[in-house]
Amino acid sequence: MHDLGIVILNWNTRDLLRRCLQTVTEANAHFSRRVILVDNASNDGSAEMVREEFPEIELIVNDDNIGYPAGNNVGLRALGYLDKGSVLETAPRYALLLNPDTEVPPNAFDDMTAYMDADPEVGIAGPKIVLPDGSLDKACKRGFPTPAVSIYHFLGLSKLFPNNPKFGRYNMTFIAPDQEAEVDSVVGAYMQIRRGAIADAGLLDEAFFMYAEDLDWAYRIKNAGWKVMYHPQVQITHVKRAASRQSKKAQFEFWRAMLIFYRKHYEATTPVWLHSLIMMGLLIKGGRNMWTEIRSPAAP
Image 1 (tube, rainbow, N blue to C red):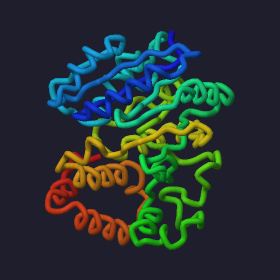
Image 2 (image 1 turned 90 degrees about the vertical axis):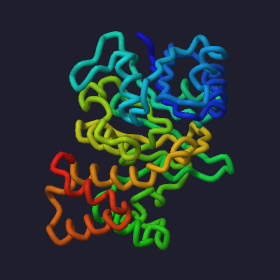
Image 3 (image 1 turned 30 degrees about the vertical axis):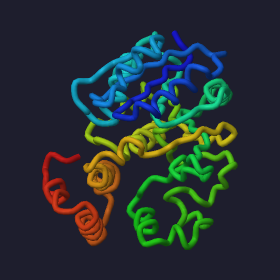
Image 4 (image 1 turned 135 degrees about the vertical axis):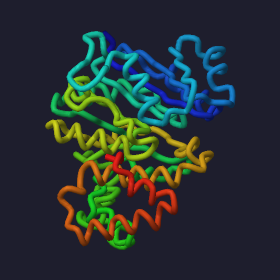
C-alpha cells in the first residue's frame, strides 16, 4: 500500500503538463507514492509526450473528454477507491487531485502528508496556491456557495467588505493568506483526501462536468464528520484555467454546476421567493441553454 496516490487529469495542456510532471517526479519522496495520469482525449500530443518523457508515470487515455469528476474518478478507481464504503486495502492512505497546470515544490508531498498524519480528524487538506504573478489564487480557501453567500458575492459585497466573515465568506477573504484555518473547501487543483474520508463519502459526483465537484466533495466529506484544512505553510503555483479557457462550454458549465450544487444541498430548505430569485439569476447568467437545465426533471 502506498502512502500517496496522485491523480492528474489532463486535457490539452501538454506543455504545462510537462512542467507539472517534472516537478512531481523531482519532488522529495520520503513517503511512498503512485502517480496516475488520466488523459481526457487530448488532441495536442499530451499522451504521447507522457509515454516518451515520463515512462514511470501510469497513463490512462480516455476515448472522450468525459469531464473533470468522471476523469478523476477513473484515476481514483485505478488506485483502489471504488465507491462509498468500498475501498480496497491496497488503496493509498491519501489520494491527491492535482491539476496539470500546477508546479509543486520539492517538499510539497512530504509536508502535506506529514501535516495530515499529525491530525487524524483532517479529511481534506490543501496548500496555499499562488498564480504565476505571485498573487493568491483565492479559490484555495473557500466557503460553500449557500444562497446568502452567493448573493453577497455576486452583489459585490465580498469585494466591499473582504474582511467581514459574513460578506467575505465566498473566498474566505477574512482569513489571511498565511493563516492556517479550517475552511469549507479547498480547490481541486491540489486537494489531498484521506482514504477514510473517501470511504465515508464516495467518489466525485459525475453529474458535474467541470466546476463545483470539489466543493460538493468537501461538502459531503465535512458532513461525514471530517475537517477540511487550509495549510499555507506549503505553497504551489497554479496557472489556472489553462484547459477551460479553451472550452466554449466553460462559462455555461460554471453556472450549470452552481445549479446542480444548489439543488443537491440547498433547494429543499430555501424559501420559494428566494428560490425564484436564484433561478432567475442562474437563467440570466447561464443563458438560453440554462432554461433546459432548470426545467429538466433529471437534474439533481
